[in-house]
Image (cartoon, rainbow, N blue to C red; front, side, top):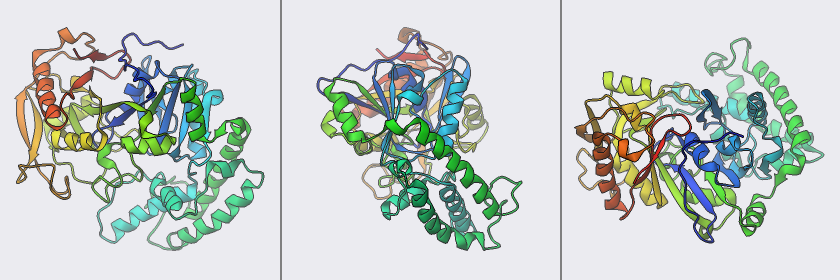
Length: 462
């Protein structure tokens, strides 16, 4: 059993057994580490939405672990894991992740439950996703920055009512169902496969394949083998998630929802088209689990002490240069799934206030303040150039330029676990953030501060 020396806790809200952890920026806030820290106090950990485009990184006993399909409560043996109704699953990646967890002694097969309506990703979805992104580039349009994991395509299937669902894979005629769907996917892909504008190199897939069809056929066979393993090991664990949640809450079980991506990437409230394809906000947690909003107790908004964004889209607080490079190096700011470098910015309070409006958090977790150790000055963006009233204009982030206010930096927050030992510069920074949080939601403040990437490197703010 893995234990945590220091961990944050959330008080149980009477008759509201579901707590939510979510990102308040553009993703990559450290939700995996935070989920792992909280999960020991829960019976169930759920991923309501997202898919294998979201890699949540943890450091367990000095080893790096990246989960893209399982909730990060996986490292607590008593916690049941639930893949929610709007969490897209690639069977090949799911099974591979199970094997990786087992290689480090973590068994999740018997305690993972799969929604019968989870959308299923196939190699076709991945290839269509990459082809569409390349087509935008060929046409001279700005690339969205997709991870190429097929997420937007599979959610498009759901919206278009032509989806393949988890429950379909557990029917006796599953191969017939897949073959029928395959004809539809192949029709969509035909224009790309037959075009000279789309090659193996263009779509950044395995270079040893001579053409796209060869790659597709090979990966689809691997995908089918993974489906067979799912059918063998999880037949009794494909569930109706809303009923599962209802029964669990009736039995007084505590539930932790781990959202993927972040509020700034919400498909409705983010900067279209540079968004994800689901709702990574508190409202998305209720639909992804099939629970009433009245079941929600605590909502923890997670933010870094600075800001990052991967891929395309506006990043108003972004800056470049040696300081940004240092933050990126110390913070290991590289995409867990895509491997792309993240763009660095100062803490953007306009973005954070927008996330607070969307989510109504009860707590705030400030991560990675230690990654700013040693900087002579640290910035906070409170407004955008030309917009003194930041939250009421159309297109909140598009084309905006943040105006940073600089404050004195700090040293020696790394691995601190006692609030009284945090440096004064860091406390002044947190107090300034708290003043801004209070402006948008009275009483809201930073409750927890991450001081490193490892377990136990956290401060409960007093």
